Amino acid sequence: MPRPEPQDHPADGSPDGRRPLASHKPGLSPSNRSLERGIEILRAFRPGSALLGNMELAERTGLSRSTVSRLTQTLVGAGFLQIDPRTRTYRLAPTVLSLAHAMRAGSTLLAVAAPLMRAAAQAHRINVGLAAPDRDEMVYLESIRYNPRPSLRSVVSGQRVPMELTSLGRAYLAAAPPDRREALLAHWRRVRKAQWPELGRDIEGAIDSVARQGYCAASWQPEVVAVATPVCVEGGDYALNMSVSTAEPTAGVEARLAPLLLKLRQEIIGNWLAMAV
Image (cartoon, rainbow, N blue to C red):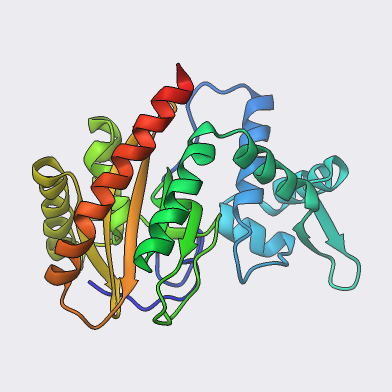
């Protein structure tokens, strides 16, 4: 089911009707609810939405404008948002980037995987990515691109892609805890009613492929074929992929990339286990 989309797909309230999974948990104290709502404000910022006002933030988060106004003031004071004096809108502050750097620097998985991914990408002139789940999306932790054929988009660390359409997301779903997988499937059945019969079959086929072969393949963008496999380490479930921009049929690309992908996963897990001892 290819879908041309050169940028991250929109957040809550977007024209395509996607709604992120609710994160609110019953029984949270008022202070914890404030923290959760503040995080929702930060989540509303995406590529292409660098500046957002209180009205837009209210629409994207479902919070009242008075709550958003209070939270944005708090986030500005804490150094997580900056206010644009000309438009009276907000942008993410550099503090947010420092958190991302701390996350990357503290990940033993990335420390092990990145050199191996780069070597594989360079040796075979392909793209290699590692991603983690976030609600109904996958977030790239690392993306190394050596495929010489130009693509419609560039992919960088921190970029999001839809879980249900990509090989990365489907590989994650194959290894996800059953209750988490069922919650996600129920979410897509609700928000993608018209597409669900075909989409559901594609997802189930990918899950079956991972169970039988260790990987799945998908081509959600024109002339881009990717294969992906789960990587379950470091207390979480991740997904590793290889992709190329090509007019070659999916089956031929899959046959060529799958052995390379599974070998790379084995190397990453082996080295990570050795480091963890």
